[in-house]
Amino acid sequence: MAKVILEPIGSPFDPQDPTYLKNVDRNSRREARIENIRKRIADGWGQDYVDRVHRKEKLTSWERVRRLADAGTPLRAIGTLVNYGEAFGSDKRSSPAAGVITAFIQVEGRHVVVIANDNVVASGSWWPRSPEKIQRAQSIALKLKVPVIYLVDCSGLFLPEQGRTFPGATGAGHIFKMNSLLSDAGVPQIAGVMGDSIAGGGYMPIISDKVFMTERAYMVIAGAALVKGAKSQQITSLSIGGPDVHVHLSGCADERVPDDSTCILRIRQEIGTLPSSATTYYRHGVAPAPPQLPTSDLRGIFPANHTAQYDTLEVIARLVDDSMFWEVLPEIGTELITGIARISGLYVGLIANRQDIVPHPSDPSRKRVGGILYREGIAKISAFSRACDSDGLPIVWLQDIAGFDLGPEAEKLGLLGFGSNLIYTNSTNTTPMITVLLRKASGAGYYAMAGLPFDPVLQLSTPVTRLGVMEGRTLAIGTFNAKLDDNFNIATEDPEERRQLKAAMKDVEDRIEQDLDPVQSARRGDTDELLLFDEIRDYLECIVEMCYQSTGVRRIKNPRIWTVHDFGILATALLNHR
Image (cartoon, rainbow, N blue to C red; front, side, top):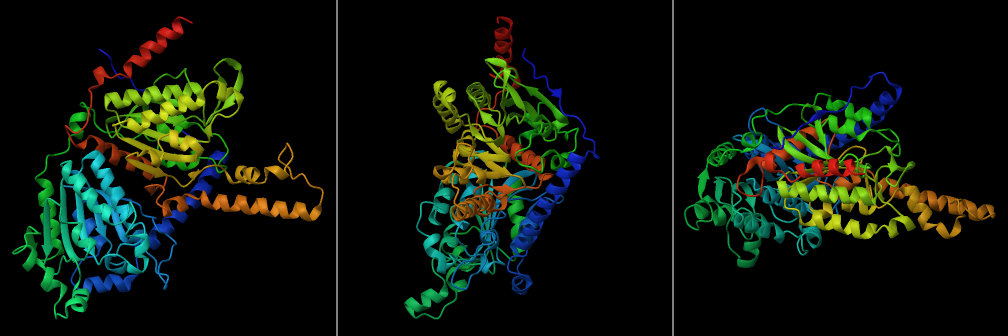
């Protein structure tokens, strides 16, 4: 009978080590910046708008979400920084978090995805990227088959920007297709309509299994102002689409409730009728355990200089239960780490880029840098990814990748073909994949290591993440290569031309460096959430539990019959026959 034998990894750091302290100082300042941005976003459009909501005897959307969650449990937001720093319309209005809250919370002991229009930002209007943010949350729920709760208080599209919100393939209408796909897949959807629900906002709750309406809520295809203009009628939105109509006449809602608090109570009661979480069952008698080494060490592990090396196993030791890990195929493709660990007591496969200098497989006297995809490593992670898919193990990808190997040797070894094999594997996997961009996420390596275009369940970034095709200096050299010598120095003797080229190269480098800022990728929605170092383990616990919450929706093999066990036997036999 095959057994999973996990071994301790990692070692404590000297808290007085100068390099460690330098890293902590630099990374703490990066975290402080992110925390300040989050605070500004959480304030929405300010206290005046909060007071206006309260005067209507309603809760703000954040208050609703917090009351909905089980007491004492965390709220894990996603898409927090979407639209940060952007302005819309002729009056340059901001849309903090794209005017919608999407988050993972626990309700009656079950993980759920909650989607709530932010009623202190333009009465919950949909802005550019609001639909994409809602759809991203829906897609996570669809992949993991976890319930979705909609807290609807939406005055429709922010019309001055309708061209960027209404028509495209991921425009507002795609939300309703996602509603339908969730329903078709049997994923529970519950809606609480607690205010405006106009046009698209009116369609969003309708396909839900259960729809509650407060006395102050209404759902309409067009609001009273538009109907008055078209029909010359003296009516209100409440009179044409309130609970009197939709609960008692149209049947578009199921139950009327007096206020927000009661609505939240009824939603919680409905979630409580669903099957309980299967996570305890899939732990196979092992309780969750924190890492033996503190996650706070992470801000001291990642170098202040983004080109410097660090020990990836020390990172893994601060993310997995008890800092225990089974490394699979350690002798092959040593620039990559593959193995098994537990997170929250649940088994996961891990694939990570090693950052050390590693020996060349054909000549140990030759060395090559980690953080690059070479043939042997690509073959290893392709096979390991397929094995995890066969076994039903969620895969956690820890990216710090500069790209694929380049040059004549790489082409002769068929890296294009091996890379295509990996891409095919990750494109067709059905097991959940979670991607963490630890630091570099560069070029085609970002794709091959299950970057967001390859549809991981969740992609997370850190304060040191650099997501882009290449570094600023490298891109500047490529842009002006015709004017550089073989050592990439400016090849002119003309002082003025040299000055202009130097300034132009600096401009390109600075622009790309700004684009690589993790805040910018989070603002664009190119990553699901930008985390502080202490939060990485917490988010992994949550999403891994969500991967195992539901039964009967995907293959999950017991550890005795894992395909991945075969790797150890075959690798040992191969080494013995060398």
